[in-house]
Amino acid sequence: MSYMRAMEYTSTEQDENIYPKLVSMNFKIGQTVYECPDQFSFFPLDYSPPGQLVQSNLVAPAAFVLDMSRTISTIEGFFSFVRQGLNDFDGGFGPNIWGYRGRDVGDTRGSVGYLSFARDAPKSSDLLQSLMSYPCCLLVAD
Image 1 (cartoon, rainbow, N blue to C red):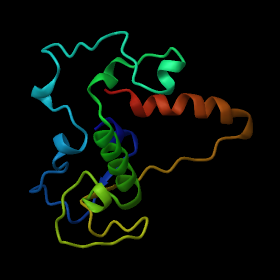
Image 2: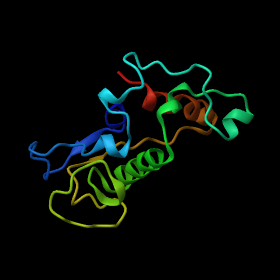
Image 3: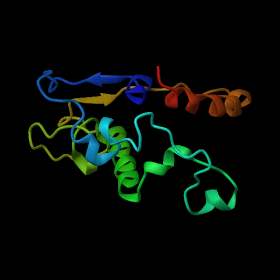
Image 4: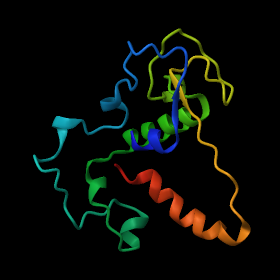
């Protein structure tokens, strides 16, 4: 939801508010409300997923509940959302309303909404600062 707000989600004429906007998210991204490892959502503080994070001595406590299939589904869902709007094309997070199967990037005719954010190009002197600060805005929840 924070990503949708940050990227200026805009509804299309197919959105009649009778369909759920996000469909089967528990299967696509995992960890639904009642599937936390414990009631407080505490994760082992020293958990580090196997691979490069362990070798770099980095930790990722929330990665304790991730598995590869849900990680791939999450990435596919975001790619589909950016490319074709909120629908079920290519593993998207949205519903399949009309059975339309457009494959062109930017084709949102079969979607209930799309991301309308357009960012102005920063000046070359501000580029590094801009790139360093902007991703944080997308990941911080309200």
